[in-house]
Amino acid sequence: MQKSNLVRDIDGWETVGTEMHYESPNLSVVTDEVRTPTRSEPRKWSVVHRKPAVVIAPVTRDGKFVLIREERIPIRAAIWSFPAGQIDETLEPDEAAVREVARRELREETGWELAPGAELISLGYFFSSPGFTDELCHFFLARPVQQSANGPQHDEAESILDCREFSGDVVRQMIADGEIRDSNTLSLWARLVARGDIFP
Image (cartoon, rainbow, N blue to C red; front, top):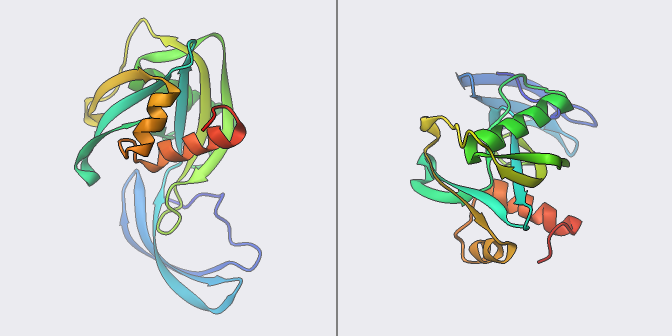
């Protein structure tokens, strides 16, 4: 799996060498040797390359947020979060492809979909953990959403246990109490607050 084209060797960055340790359809683990703008001697760094992803903040007509509760094996816990998913189609998808993945993940994971005349607003992207991975997640605000006639259609391997609507005040308290603690949801919530889409 190749690294994202959004992570480029420009402006004084130069990849001198790369050693592959592991590769699968979803990620690869490498050690890169990189010369940075402030260091003439190359540094070795272990990097996990991952496909880009989408994270969606679905909002109902009455202003509630739709969250899923999903088992996460790496942390041995089930946690509440915004729906999200990897973009499998291509490493560098165009905007239309990214939007389609956001619509699909919303439908599959929650059983909700965009209502007629709804907005799917792009809010940019963020790097989930830039100390070890180049994974980036595209943010979307979907409003208003309505329940789909077909209900959720997620893969059982995803282990989604529940899907509920929460008011903004409840989501805020869940964050304050540490009940919501994944970087995708916290980062998208921060972006929404910074934009004035919701108020702290």
